[in-house]
Structures are given as C-alpha cells and as structure tokens.
Length: 119
Image (cartoon, rainbow, N blue to C red; front, side, top):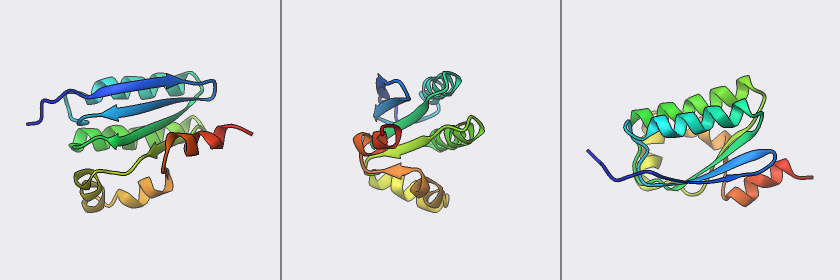
C-alpha cells in the first residue's frame, strides 16, 4: 500500500478554490480532500483541482472526485480537474470509464480553468 503523504497546496480566490495535489489520493488521504471540497461548495465557490502531481489513486480517490462533480452540480457550481494525468491515473479512469466524465470537466492548467470565472 502506498503510504506516501498527499500534499494539498490550496489557493482561495473570490469565486473558486484551486488545489494542487501532490502524491496519492488514497483511502487514508481522501477524507481531507472530501472535507476541502465540501467546505468550498458550502461557501458558494467553485473548485479547481490540479492532479498532475497525483501519481496514484485508489477507488476512494475516484469516489472523492466523482462526489466533487455531483456536489458541484447540486450547488450549481463548477468542479474542474486540471493537469496531465499520470499513466496510472489515466489508466484507472479508462478502465472505470470515467475518462468521458472527467474529459467534460478538464482543463490543461489552473490558469486556463480560472478564465471561466473572470470576465
């Protein structure tokens, strides 16, 4: 089991919270990310998550991201993933057929995603 820590670099803006994730999103780390996602949407903001630094994800990590999409939709907010997916994460999305879902909610960079919130 991967026990490497997950690091969250959080930047709170007026309309959204951006998070750069480094390390794995696994069952022992997912609650921290879930809490951050829920708090962001409770504040009426949208969420941008850069997972280019995420080298591994288990089913708990996938569930956390799917819940983020669902919560954003229920709050009429946006949930955007950014960055290139690692080969392991990309493969996981493909075999679970979530690549189509996350293609809809994906931008190359946080800066590109942030343009959706500025006029």
